Amino acid sequence: MKVSSSSLNMLRKRFLLMMPCIIFVIRRSKAVAAPSASKTLIWGPGLETNIALPARFFIQTVDTTGRNFTTSPGEKTFEVTFTSPTDPYARIWVQILDRNDGSFLVRYRMYASYTDLHIQILLKDKLVGKSPYVLRGAVYHESCDCPEPSGALWEKNMHCPASFSQIESDLSVFPSVDPDRNAHEILQRFGKRHSLCHYTIKNNQVYIKTKIFMDAFLLSLTRKVKLPDIEFFVNLEDWPLEKRQASEKPSPIFSWCGSNDTQDIVMPTYDVTESVLETMGRVSLDMMSVQGHTGPAWEQKISKAFWRGRDSGKERLELVKLARANPDMLDATLTNFFFFKHDESLYGPLVKHVSFFDFFKYKYQINVDGTVAAYRLPYLLAGDSVVFKHDSIYYEHFYKQLQPWVHYIPFKADLSDLLGKIQWARDHDEEAKRIALAGQRFARTHLMGDSIFCYYFKLFQKYAELQVTEAKVRDCMELVEQPKDELFPCYCARKKVRDEL
Ligand SMILES: *[C@@H]1O[C@H](CO)[C@@H](O)[C@H](O)[C@H]1NC(C)=O
Ligand SMILES: *[C@@H]1O[C@H](CO)[C@@H](O)[C@H](O)[C@H]1NC(C)=O
Image (cartoon, rainbow, N blue to C red; front, side):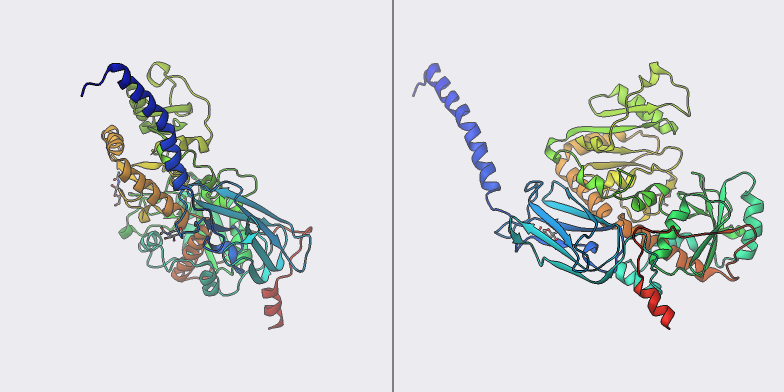
């Protein structure tokens, strides 16, 4: 049969007219099942009495047929309210973060302690899951000084892991720790040229020589749990310090960053630690807020690698040069020159700072060292882009738990294979997406505030076990008092029990 060109055009036109309808129908049928109040899942530490801040729980939207939503059912789908039978004016700040994958993160901050806190979650006017959730007994706010006397019970309440391989590995080079010897030796070896901070925790009180940021965290931890007596040194610089090998009697020094050729004991970085303390406070980027700002869905993200930052490492300069030569694959520019000379012909002009949340408009995120490990890795993992991680001698407390090709895509220290790896991700979109989601799941389970608290507690506990002499409050150390909370004093039932005993 002969088909005239005009009827062919008609057919084409008709087909084109049909196209939007087909798309519309497919979309409709995909989202036709409505969210179900009874089937929707709710879980998380914020629904338990004995977990003080940072409190949160999760909502996974499930439809009436029992299937998980994988896209947002709408930002305002659920309504969460807190009430306390003992206080009609309970002061609780609640935030619902839409994670755009069918789940929500609900976080709250209490400004006072309450009894039998009720958490009610509504879908339209139906109660969701097992709502209302009742936190029986006293729920303490962050500034309430109310340490749990039993470390074992506290760890159980917090669901801390039994061990952290990085702690085991770091402490394995110290058969014992002698606070008396350290007090003398560490100051002599490092005290003049480096900034170190000497701490003692005794009877759950924090003593220091010079007041510096970390005491805010230690005070917070001692409000929550009774710590063992310990005496230790914290390195306040970026670089790890102890270059002696295990056989040469290294000194124990706590650092934010470890490296393949030093023996420093790593602890969570000040950045991630501070963001835990300041959650819903003055810090806007933290491990929870980032989950509510992961940008467009995977399919809508730009298939390019993205990087912004300052010139704090040679590799970063190389990365920028590589991007200038391959702008279709890699968008990497410097926001600041501080360490090197700014040669505009090589590195291009400086660009304005980009909000971290905007990074997630791109599918591929580059993590490359600065002076030491780039402390942004926890936040990059928490997004829903795939992370490309630079091989490096530097590491943070959680790197040991990360696996290449599972949680991130590795690339060589000299960047020689980076473009090839980006091309691989473009050619293997499903696999790249799977790695992105595995990295995100890792961050959601291992890098949240409670994990950070658990890590410190475990580290101090294991370290205390190695001490062969008593931790002492040395000359010129000062007691750091807990801040007074005059507006909302707390009545600590745990302390009362102890006093009565
Ligand atoms: C639905 O989501 C929950 C919470 O993330 C998860 O545990 C469960 O396995 C999911 N169910 C399916 C069928 O994927
Ligand atoms: C550092 O050590 C880790 C673990 O042993 C190794 O995977 C990595 O390749 C090392 N990096 C460098 C640059 O030496």
